[in-house]
Length: 259
Image 1 (spheres, rainbow, N blue to C red):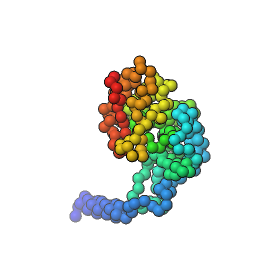
Image 2: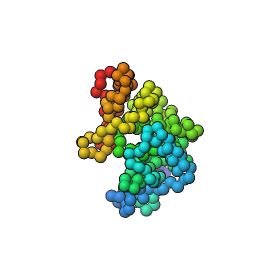
Image 3: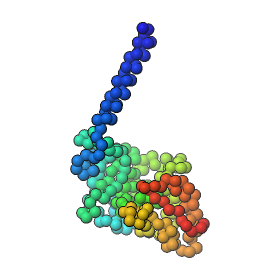
Image 4: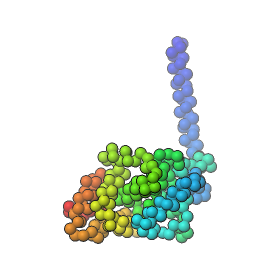
């Protein structure tokens, strides 16, 4: 056998061994969730700067948009990476999310998809602080509101907003970029009415659904008659793309008023 064929044979054997190890590893993963609360499967963030930043951002969000729908008594921070104990379970990682785990006692969890030393960490944390105000709202209007708030709060605090500005300036079809630009323009044109958006909600999907979305028609109805068309014109360029990114998780309702 030539040296080349020997090397090829060794390479194939190593590749086969690698594939077997992957398949055995996947087969060894457990379905379902680890025992105990869901958030306990993820690494806690005990960084004092993170907690101080979160408290300041949440206070600023309340100043702008009002008190939370569910009184917030405790917020747990988690890096959405599995703990060693949960490593064998088939559960997601590297996501950012806010959830209320105990509405009676006001306990919330914020999961962040990057480490505290990552460029985009504070931007994501500030974004999630807006979701503390009403974690039931899941739609593109609120995602844009939270992103605009994140940028403005980080700028106010002299903290980096990471790579989001550059990313959003380039993207033409990414829904987070579009929702950010749409809500930034609505805020600029309607600064006094803008915070009311979070109080104009309806059920997302069926009427008995616990999730909510922003009722844009209800919000537009609060505007002066002479300016309603202006709001519709701002939203109109984003309707097509954002409408295609809706489903069980994200809602989005286009205005019914003609521009």
